[in-house]
Image (spheres, rainbow, N blue to C red):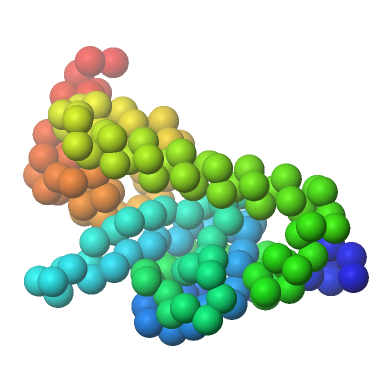
Length: 171
């Protein structure tokens, strides 16, 4: 089996789920075009944004077979995703060094983003959080609703608005 047979380009329309919480997910994809948002529901019933995925990112609800997804992943724009069954990908990964490098690079990127997000949420003021977001998610600011970005950064939309104003005055 060659690499081209592992995946198929799939259109996910804005507002449709790539992955739904609680369902077994066997799809792994690489975003070719578009933005998706990973989120969960907290104990108060509120959506909590945990991830943003954009062009070049690997997206999957979970990477362990036969375990229901722990998050929802929703298309924020019409998306084109190169989708594969990760059970097939991971059986093929040991025989294809190019595929191994792509997967490893993207897992490392996701791990780095998650680690740095936790650090910035715990140790930074709103201005540093905003700077971090601009660095980690370039070109995403005008593609995602600001209230979602605010929640992702652990602040209210009003705090984000004040932070953006303060940031622009410093430029």
